[in-house]
Length: 565
Image 1: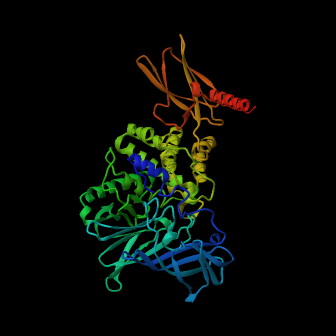
Image 2: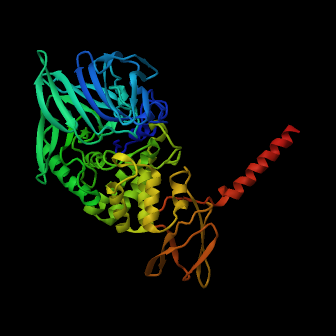
Image 3: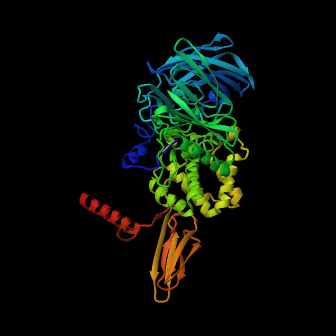
């Protein structure tokens, strides 16, 4: 999901909540434990056939779901669809099936048990008014806008809420269909941009046309989208293999050519580091939206208005494009591992900065920007089987990126870059390139030959940062640095910058929970972690030191007891 790069105070406030609802209290969430019923089948294919009516802000039609049984006798199919829709009929093999629809669940009785590895297709006819996005894409739903001419301008985003807010599906990150068809009927004055390739546009009833899109790649449910407006299409070839397409309003094309050039260069950057664009047989698409943006496979929502960072690149396009690798191609099997999508995508931005603007800018990005946005309110990885609300927060972006930044400090640049590329590209235990955090930790251990459990336990599975205790004492014949981690079982080495007269040097010193003393020439100035490689909290000193606080609290408690007496 996109994250605003140049944050104002109001943006910081909004991002702290993630939506108009406090995090964890959105009306719909995605993920969580996979139900018993849903664990008994795999989805192979969705075929959406929907009419979207801007005048009534409604949709209706049918969705065909092809499933395969993974148990000896599948009797009940459970799908997700929010209750505000009316389900008209569910058909299989031309027979209407018995079903119930409540609590956002469709429970469908099959006419006969479906044997292991057998396939059936369900056709669900329904209609209703989808939720309106109050602050897309965080508070997702349909965005019903109009352009400057008053023409409808529609988009949908649903990462946190799940695709069940607009079509029946198995709303869980662990199960992606192998392909999806998206057939959307809209007024004939409008254009529909969606995932994959456009196979054609056909006439429907008078005044309406149907746009036929299909992606033949696996796709996560929230990556399926439609963008509807009076678009024109700007194009640019990519390596002679596919097209970069920009669906843009005719009144907003002034920066389109430069944006497409940036897109080409950014695609080449990602391909260099993580492997060729994963959906090269289809397209890389952008659709102008009346909200900031969102990653949707092969058709990223883009509402950044060509704005650039101070360094001169379009952050939103870079970030959402990165999700084609981190999120769309490599996908977290559990929302508990959301940080893999967002954190490693933000880290890729740091890589882009170093490639184009130098190492000093890379370090500044983490030291000044990323670090200042980290909250440490909850662990990056909550318990297994998390919902989007439980996993989402600003730390999955910047603290997640900092985890990779610190691994670079421990492993070296080239080793980390090779690890990230292989994490994307190498075969996985789970189908469709799905991963969990344990897969990442295992790969790091294999590459380093070390058990870095102390590192991952602190930064992924606990909220609080490690605490570093250090004092510098100047003596007549030397300068002493006393240093240790107050945090138990933590062993991060620390870089120090030593300045003596006109000389200065850096060295990496081993630091453990056991205090150590390092000696330097008299009068030396010692700076700890000058480049900001490590996330830590300095130990409190002076009146507010840990022991003093404990003493004061104990004294206040004693006074309270005396007062009671």
